[in-house]
Length: 473
Image (tube, rainbow, N blue to C red):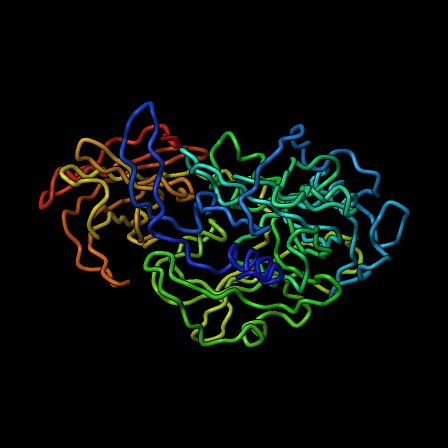
C-alpha cells in the first residue's frame, strides 16, 4: 500500500467499515505492573482503535502550541448564512455551490453555526481543506467515547495553509497542532463516501455533510460529554478533490462476532422506504443489536439487519444553510419503515447510563476464548440489550476484568439484568454458563456501574451493587 491516494481512501473507510481488531493489547505501566492483555473492542469505544498513519511514516511531532478551541470566532456569516462567495471563503472557487439540495458554506460559517448551537440535530454542507495526521501513541488508559478525539490531529479549514500541519524535509517529518478557525470532523461507523484521488501529504479539498448534538454524547464520560455534543459528526463525504461522491453504505459487520453482514437491500432500495421529499445524507446497515452504537436512543436485540438512515426534507427552502434531520430505521428483510425520530435531542431528554464490567477469578488474563455477556430487560420482560461486556480486558494475580465499554442509555425505570459466560469459536457463540441475575432501578441522569463477578470456572456469578463509574485503568 505505497500509493498515497489509496492510504487516504483507506483512512476514511477504516473509520466507517473495517472491523475493529480483537487482539490489541494494553501497555503495562510502571505504577501497577499489570500484565495487560487481549482487548475486546467495538465501534462503541472506537477511541481505543490504533491510529492510522496517513502520511505513511511514523510522525515526529513538533508540538508548536496547543490546539485552539473548536470554532473560535469566525469572520463568516451567522445562522442564516448562504453559499455566496466572499474573499475569506473557499466557496465559489474550486468548490461546488451546492451538493444535492444543500447550499455549501465555508468552515468559518459552519463554525459560527456550531458555536451558536445551530448545528444541534441539523445537517450542513461545508467546503474546506481536510488534513489528518496520526502519531505513534500509547494506548489510552481510560474509556473513550466514539466522538472523543484521541492521538494525532485532525483539522478542516478554509485555506490550505492553515490545514497544512506537517513539514517534510528529506526523511524527517515534523507536525504541529492546528490553530485558528476550524472544524475537527469525526468520521463514524455510518459515514458515507470516500476520498477521490489526492496526495496523502497535502490537505484534501472536501465538502462534508455533518451535524452536531449527536446522541452519542451520552456514551462519553461525564467530563467530556459537552465536548462530544459539540463534535462535528460527518454524515457523508459529498465531494472530494473535484468529484461528486455518491451516497454509499459502509460494509456492515457484526460487532460481537466480527463477521461480515450481507444485507438483502441495496442503498437505493432502502431509500425507497422513506418519503420522496426526503434527501438521504447517510445510510448504513447494522445488526439490530448494534444499532445503539449509532443512536443510543434505540436499544434493540437480535441478529436481524436494519438500516439506519439520516435525511433532510429537500422541500424545506426556508431553513437556511442548516437543515433539520430525521433518523429512520428500515427493516432489511421487508424494506419497511420500523421507526423514526428527529436527530435533535428533546430538551427534556435526561437518560440514565449503565456501565457494565465483569471480573473473572482463576483466569490468567486473558487467555482462552470464553467471554462475559449480559442482557437487560424492562420490568415487563421486553428485551433491550444482549451482548458482550465491552471495552478492554486487563488483569493481574490471576484475575481478569472486562470493560467498561460504552454504557447503555436507559429511560427511568426498573430493569432486570442477567450476566453469563460463553465461548466464542470462529465467530460462533457457544452455550451460556455461570449465569446470574439482578434487578436495578434508575432515575434520570443516574450514572451507575454494575459488576458481574465470576468467582471461578464452573461457579455461578454474583453482582456487585451499582457504584459510580470507574472509567480509567
